Image (cartoon, rainbow, N blue to C red; front, side):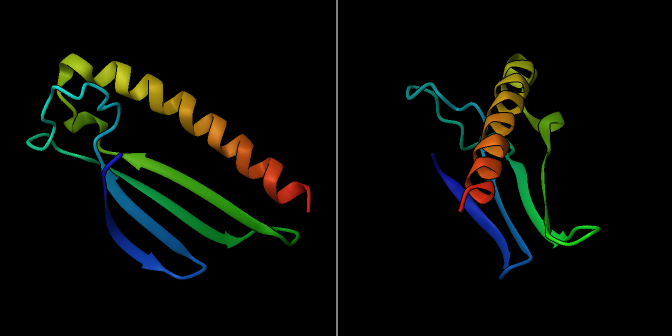
Length: 91
């Protein structure tokens, strides 16, 4: 997986760009637009920390692979959010 770090604000924000669902090693995805993945941490109501994950830019993915890229990422982010929740819930 290749990614380009966009911005880091320690303990608040992290973002990167990448080519989602770029799984065929015979294809050069470098000419395609990337999506932007953002992780934001903020104080949650009632204490604790709220993590917000946003991936934008799917409208720039070539139509031929857009739906599958979105589907795969949707499932992937759901699983990663569950992994994070398990990690922070069990010290």
